[in-house]
Length: 381
DNA sequence: CGGTTTTGACCGGCGC
DNA sequence: GCGCCGGTCAAAACCG
Image 1 (tube, rainbow, N blue to C red):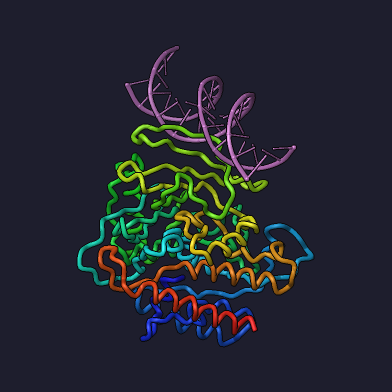
Image 2: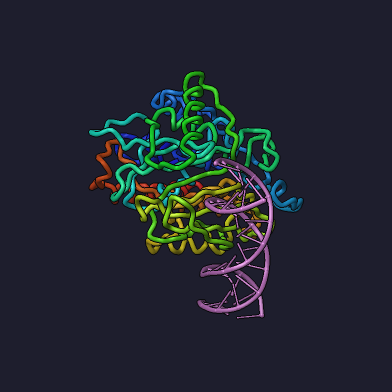
């Protein structure tokens, strides 16, 4: 999302939320589609590939997710299967480290070629981000099957409520320099195979349905098990071959949620935590965690800084009315959640120099927060 | 006291 | 069949 905002950066370096979050205009605005389309066109022009339109739907995610017929329908984002902003919001690195910088999903000038990375896992795409210690840090996100997924709830429009990781990641991979990560893992072969698939995608502009819903992220973290907004219960730990650092096994504690997470430290860099998510949360993060997140955000330390934030989560349905009682609450909560995420997004300098911190980063971030808050406030009012 | 973590044991898949 | 390995179980310990 932030990356999208960046792509639409105006000459002042600001990212008006009205364009950054065209879909946040919760009222059915016939012009919003037009605006969104305009932004989309500009982005598409910059990115060099066609971006399916974002759709705004008034659907009841709760009805789908929780089968509660009385809940007031709440506006949620319905992202077209062909495009989703979720990776940007979900990108832990984007939300985690104020000093980290994201390589935008578009060709950017750079003095030196980014550290080569390749998608890993059986269905991963790769995003390259940088950070002070790791100039180009990969985020690897597994791609869930597109469409036809039994367990991914869909809205009235049929678009998945669970954020889609497929095509947008592929799109990101398209315009970046996906290459090889020095992982040496036994998944490398599969990685290469999938890269070939991505190449096909690039050739034909067709999204290939990935076979796995696993998602893998490699993030920097001082913690062995960084908080990601969800509650996990550790059920095992094992030292696996090829890595002296033990691998920890976590299960989501949410009743009925089968999502699992494997966390292990990178062999080469213990500051890198590799988190592999198995499954997709079809529930929202614990409300207290969200509130805690907001509170912590203001104090500069939050779960949004968690490197693994959001992977495998369900941000577009965060605004279920189960969280807050007011009919307006769902919208507010969603907005707050997005704003929380936005507020933690570091600035996205187009000109990135090997992870060096843009001196204007903080200022730019502040401005973004300020603008976003103001615009959001205006929307709310 | 309820939830979480720890940790050794157990199980199934896979290669030899 | 055997051993290795990754993943899971479950009881005890720990913690707030």
